[in-house]
Length: 221
Image (tube, rainbow, N blue to C red):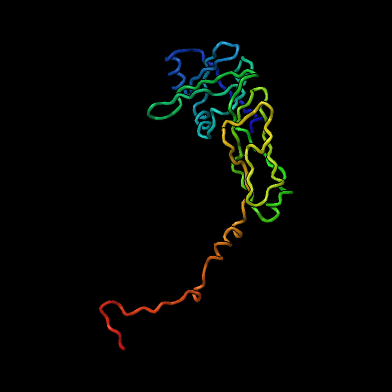
């Protein structure tokens, strides 16, 4: 959920330059920098294994973090760049940007569903498919919604609910211009295959055709 901003604990890096960065990597850390806002750039370093785990989960650069550095006030940041080794493709440096309250950023916001008990399509045996459990929105750092809510109470079997059907939080807008589908109610598998079964023809309904003897053979008549 976007409203549950995860903490990111890092260490302040005492040295700067290539020598200090190499030493951080030898110590199992990844050097980085925090910039922007009304403060000076802050050299940092974070645990290599923890960073690699977060990167493999995906959307690291679209996640808002509460950065915690000993001796400094907590600050909201977002990753702006991850430099990688040209051969091993492993992280070698990370850039974070401090966010002001008015900063606009892209974040994935979770989708919550309401109206399932009233949905006529589900009452008839339909299946609800949440095509996008998260939606990427352009939001203001000071007003990040915890989720967006979709109402499926009027959906029939075969109906879809798109982003244009959703009331988005004030100041938010989707990053995709087209009217994409978020959820849909599909026919149950048994009903969907019924029409295919109707097209099947029993063997005794197929007329047989008398065929002559193979080429080169004569009939016994």
